[in-house]
Length: 354
Figure 1: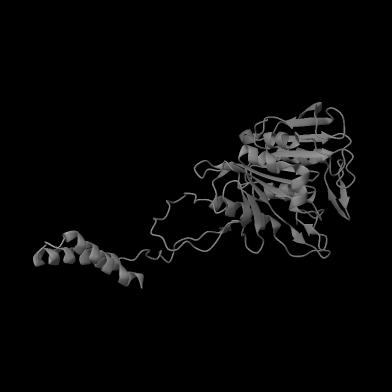
Figure 2: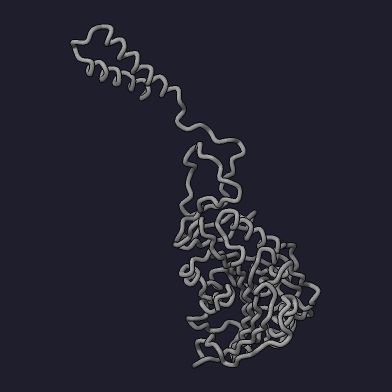
């Protein structure tokens, strides 16, 4: 064994250093000193075990491997954020119960500097990758240093993913699911492992994901600072929404949308409000001015149409510095051909930089 060989080598070296002229007393003193040091080292454990109640990581990154072994490092102070399990500049998986989500950590992430977060929600029958490709937020999140979370809904009887957002959309087969609770756990779990700016948490979704973003703002406003709904809608009943605090809202809707109609409509017997009524409801909830201001053809959102085609309706005077805005995309369908500047403009609006 290596531990048995090391004393022999050390003793030999000590005797050699003493030299042939050394007397017996000198040699005894040298050997005693060397053996004492070696025995002390042999009796000292290399790595004492951690305490039984030491917290473990809740996030698995792409390069996660076996434990590096016990540690004697002191526990971080209360409220401190641990080093990220997913390395900056990479994507990994965060375990949230039985429904993991994907997290993209920006290259510039610094645990000492809380970052805004975007939670992305797909539409009915779609996937996180598909809505990621449509909205184009990933590259902009990296450029701005935002944490970027991609979540998946629950498969229905036909295997199509959905969010249980409102009666109108889109739990059509009635399976028991608590998507609002699950997504709240997602936000809490990410915030426990990463430095998240609580005033910069945006839930963005398309269609069914837009409906779900509104539900998150209604039920978990303590965790959400802004929502972006592309072709989604609020619940039909105003009584269904009672947010704990004001939340900024951006509704983006094509006026030619035949799936979730700009003017409002229904899915089966269940109605949903128009785009204008959805933002009007939030204007009241956020204590905004009663009359909005509209600027026609202020933005170029639809790539296939030349020039600016999108009118911007803004409510002013909202509580706590929030904003409520509607982008009416003239002639756009349910899935617009979004212009390259869309992602930056959306995040400017949602994060209060516009």
